[in-house]
Length: 186
Picture 1: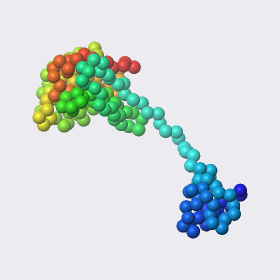
Picture 2: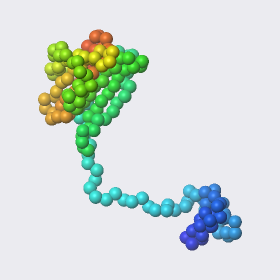
Picture 3: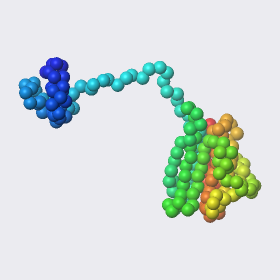
Picture 4: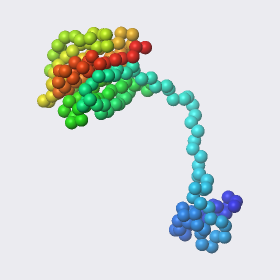
């Protein structure tokens, strides 16, 4: 079949209000063979991308928690964009009911993490993956929140900062989370 007959069939189908082109049947009065919709040519080829290729995205070294109790499971994992080429990772673990959560953020800025809390008090330091971490505690509405900040010294901001945020988590689970944190070193 030539292109002229196909276009003629399509035009007559549209003008006549028929859906012949969709069902693959012939238009009344047209003596050309039917063309199944799957074999119909695309109306316009997709444009080819031009210019500079997309930049390669780099992800901050991701901290992981290896020894949480079985009732605390990964509920969400999200990327945080710092620039068009750099992303951080935020993982949220919960007990399933949502009343106990542990978030671990890889990359970021301390003031962005702490701005939602207005009553944070320093509690001291703790070892996290062999590094010193600063512990602060506060509340958000009726929830008790403990945060641990630590910096990977060999990595520039914002990727060097890591934060653990424990909300309404019993002390034994909190201690296990801190003891089970690992961060790959570049």
